[in-house]
Length: 212
Image (cartoon, rainbow, N blue to C red; front, side, top):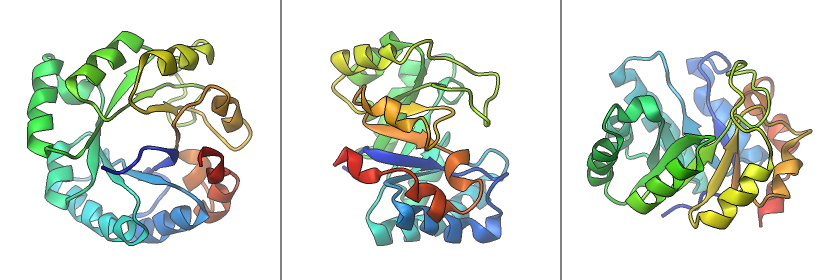
């Protein structure tokens, strides 16, 4: 299974025109990005599959994982490496839904959003999640009203209690990301600070070798 470590870039339809999807993602990878998540909030199902297949060709070329946001069926149909799920994706009976998705995707990556809830992360680790994500860490341009982590010390507790990779997300940029390295997070998830502008130059501002 692919490693969840380093710079985890998440696409955004508002920052990446469909016609530029492969070009911008490839630039981000060449700049040092280690993981790509396709985050499609507005496209219909068949279009999301088509976009995922296009990106899979790029990520396969560079041997890095492609994660699909929200939709395990898009992940399955596109042969992506995995899926990332939030509360709204799992519904009211989260454990039952998770187990169904785990069965559907077999040995693929399953990441879970845990916001500021460490007990939630522990529960999903026991169920078989591949990694968990916490945040927002800093004020986020993507979700400006969301500030979930009250202190970076939260990550110290998370790393002590969890064996699976811990991903930090929300408002992370080239000026603040190194603060998170002191807390041994496994990956940092970034949207605007990679794809708002030139993805290659933006990615170069983050030192991916710090995780080696």
